Amino acid sequence: MNSYIKISLISTLLCITQSLVGQTFTMQDSLRGSITEERAWWDLSHYHLSVEVVIQDKYIEGKNQITYKVLEPNQVMQIDLQRPLEITKVIQNGNELSWESKENAHLITLKEKQIVGAMNKLTVHYKGTPRPAARAPWDGGFSWKKDANGKDFVATSCQGLGASVWWPCKDHMYDEVDSLLMSVEVPMHLSDVSNGRLRGVELNEKKKTKTFHWVVANPINNYGVNLNIGDYVHWDEVYQGEKGSLDVSYWVLKDNEAKAKEQFKEVPRMLEAFEHWFGPYPFYEDGYKLVEAPYLGMEHQSSVTYGNHYMNGYLGTDLSGTGWGLKFDFIIIHESGHEWFANNITHRDMADMWIHEGFTNYSESIFLDYHYGKEAGQEYVRGVRKNIEHLKPLIGPRDVNYQGYPGDVYYKGSNILNTLRTIVNDDDKWRDLLRGMNEKFYHQTINSSDLEKYIADFLKMDLTGFFNQYLRQAAMPILEYYHRDGKLYYRWDNTISEFDMPVDLNFEDGNTLRVFPTVNWDAIKIPDTAFDVDPNYLIAIFKSAE
Image: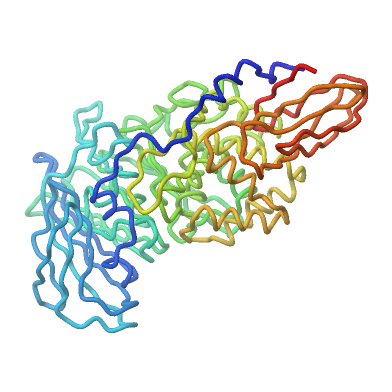
């Protein structure tokens, strides 16, 4: 057997706990993470977010005009805004409204009767000193930085923390706004880059500021909305993609223009690979932007932020340890992969973060697969296994602001998908599946169960045990086996009772045999030659004493 047989893992794996440790939930977590009564009755249609960024004071002031459709009768609306920011007033049809605050949720009492089917507007005014980012983008907020020339370099990031850390909104993933207008006022000598297309720039000579107006035509998740302020230079190109001409633009600090023009040649290669595997770029109407930011990067929709210092790998390192991770710029590939998985297909609940990160981690190997071949991609995805901890299930608790999801949503997530591809054993069908789910769930928010059902139905396979084991259990499946009298005896250990995943045995003579273990011992006659278990299965292997 090869080195993939890891007998030493057994004692460790058997001791792994499967509890949801790491986060104690509060009332605020429930207010943020659940579809409350004050959220459920109205559907988002449009935001017009206007904000002035007063950089010298690290202060913002603005308003958000919210257009919504009434789904059910109700007179109380929940709007979220995190301290220390404060709502100053709420206006509907010229009337000032009152509200009650519960933590960071603000329950606004509406005066006019809310008639089912009506389209209404409400404007929330706010101001304050927003939370500074402690460790962007993981612990986000506002990043107040300087560039190498001492000019201000400012950006927002808020995944997990929530968009309400810097603007008032309906801060839950289930309801994406259909369209968005952002008007961002910044000092005259700087530029703002936000999502979508630039409609125009308004000069404010008296205040010595400029207001940038950005329009987003597609549905967008809250944390995908961003602003980036700096001494930018930009250039454009047109990519001829599956849906025609895609406008691509690049915004970088002036000093970095030359090296950015070289490094960003990765973008057309990314688009080519991902459109092949995942289907058309999901936001042709809004274009694609790559924007330099004062932190590592984030998947802000149509405004992907970049801070990888113009190096291949992850800040110059290979997360897989195989060498393949230095063949591409990690931030360009990974954060752009989120345009398909996170921005096009968005989870409805933080419990299902694996949808975002598992598929996007897998997109790194798919990029390698397209440009360097299948084995390159699979070697890479196998390489990132060393980062898997197997301490928590990938799917966490629902209806709370769950931020304790494990890092395994990345690396275990991608290896689950590589395992499933190996089971399918038909790369054309696998590609059709990946493209089909981006078409089926185009611009939608979904739960993991929605995706699991689609995959099972598409493949015409019962994957209940597969998904329940890999997504809802922490433990690694163990393939236990031994030889006796020309037969191979085998079973699954360390699994749930319904786990019945097949496994391929690759023999020395080039033949392959697929066996179908269960939790009970079974046997099959095998050739009298050495074999290896296909290394693309995410399992541990233990040879028992006969």
